[in-house]
Image (cartoon, rainbow, N blue to C red; front, side):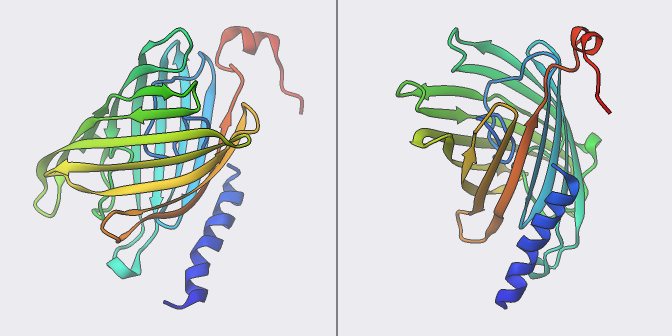
Length: 260
């Protein structure tokens, strides 16, 4: 492949990210696995990642204690090697934290969503929200005094409009992620793999990356992903997550103002 063509897509990705203005501690979505944690009541989380395969934006609102409402939109680039055109997908889902330990280092949550679930990838093009449903149960196990955090997220999905024959297809989703701290200052080393088994099959993929955590509000990351069989996956991705104050609570709205 021509090296100049290989560089055009990453350059376009960087420009796209800058133009849109917009992962994080263990809870950001540049990585497909998630953990038990929901953000404090009233906060918002805005995540944008862009890479060689697609660009994705998340908007998350913690409307109630332990409950998050999430909106995800993804734009997949045209791929000449696979003869596919550019397409778009939407995903709306809720997350509820079922249990958390006293130290807030381990717990269990549950997801329920409409649209194609994170980590499930096919070249089918646009997927209607009302024809795709998924669920997952993430739980987190800490090791070595929280130096290592291990997220495990089994789940299931159903696609009511799968393939050329528009069949109903079920899938078992699996995703797991390990984050290692205290090796690089203020940085997590992250590795994960994920995929889907069953009729609604999605190739097993992996991602590895670095997540810089200098503060509690803005956290960037860079990662690389591919399929285990050697075929292309997510490729190189850059991303950033922005956490807001608890602006969705009445007390914050009443006692604060915007300076124009």
